[in-house]
Image (tube, rainbow, N blue to C red):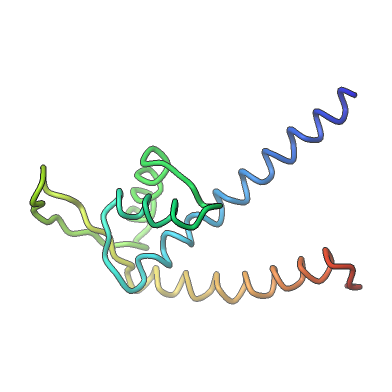
Length: 120
């Protein structure tokens, strides 16, 4: 019985890792055509259901994307509260997102094929 719980725990950890890995590119896709600030990104991800996240997850991710040159930022005054940092995809981020889309398509097609009973 303990083995089953352990397996279930590892499935939860695996799904969590998959979400975290895909989240970076989901954020980049949201910034592809529209500048957004952190809270708006959280709200857009929450609206998708399976991508629920928090500001505590998004801001470190955005900081890393900025350090890596994948997003650019500007500060803007807010009508309610302090200025907000808006994020947009940089040219390097656009290339990275395009590469991910190609790889994701191949990967997800292969996984779907196997999971639905197809032969590799």
